[in-house]
Image 1 (cartoon, rainbow, N blue to C red):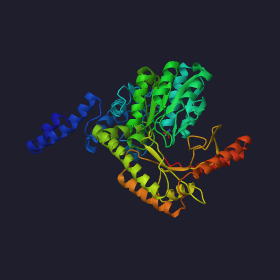
Image 2: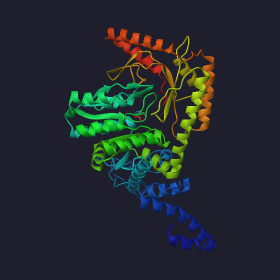
Image 3: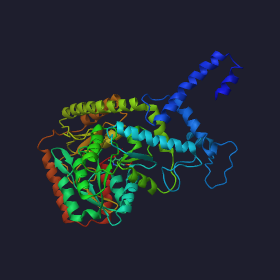
Image 4: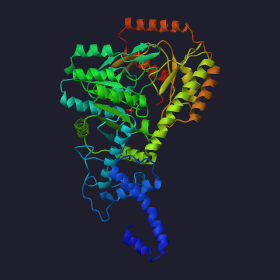
Length: 507
Ligand SMILES: *Cc1c(COP(=O)(O)O)cnc(C)c1O
């Protein structure tokens, strides 16, 4: 209501009451004005009421909500179901125009404002997370893998002859698939076992660059957040190689924003070497439903180019979910969640160590991964994967049991041994757990108590040098397999199924 309306109100009820109400309304308006002025995350999170007032202000600015609007185009944001319209707060136009995902949509001023603000808030948040030199970012209604595809296809425009993507192995199917879907050739660089940790083989990357020739390489694709025992890639060293050889550096930062270890790596690599683009999932970092990711980078022009590569308009749902969530959290709220996650990581580590020790197992020494951890699983008489299934039936999700079966998986024609382990043979079977944003102490306690029950029922072998025999057996399997190299299609198929069962991925 404007001031005329309030004056009219004073004719209906005593003016003091009206003024009081008007002041209360002003509190919301002030927050909204501040947001529009600063285009930054509010420090304190907003109430749902303030957020809904703003959503309503924006939605009345979109043409589908204009009184008396007469749409005669083929796309007029006509929504059949009131329930659907409600779910979208009366927004229906999506974001972008046919040519560019970050373009203003003339029919939807409100949606366009929300898109601009969300991208601005996201940029502010990325800085806050530990990457102050980030230049530009935008939210895309596609998960991380597809956003990597979009980024690589954009690189391709300026490097039309380059077809290789150097990829330090990360056993997450979206990663390898994104390279193949982009029509490129992955060049797998196996990780190096250092102590218990799997780390980037920087020399092998260097050798590959020399072997293939920099101009034939589209980009080097590295990963920060990943499952233990893999550590985040050595971003600084790879960034250096990219800088010296003039090769784009694409970083998969799937759930790395919540972890200062990962953001620090990105900041450093960009400062001393080269990082072009880094992609993060909205659901994994911001507690929203799956569906979006943020493409970010250190060069405005490149980011604009990626946004222009996106064909057509896009769903605004992931943008709106993030917009609402960021306003609701505020910078303080997000920082508190990050702090809590860090504390729970330590708590989970301590609890898992106790549980592992009790059952004669060992917590793997993974110092560079600050999200995910792993304990050995040496069992007698049956497969360690049974432990994974037992946990799953006890409603524990997100843990992964990785056994060294030596099985070969075929992912879009690319063969991997022990896919899920990040390497062909890891010295033992293990179970992973991660401390992700939003996790609670109760989650940790419940997990440990259920794990303890499951392990108590299994015949756990003490983790000792006997364990190494398991490794030798695995190596035997491997050498047998490589001698009978050409496997029949059926065999590959069944081994993949087995691998799927074995490494129960519930992420
Ligand atoms: C989640 C994740 C991805 C991407 O998965 P999407 O489903 O495409 O978001 C890639 N790599 C890692 C390490 C991940 O955790």
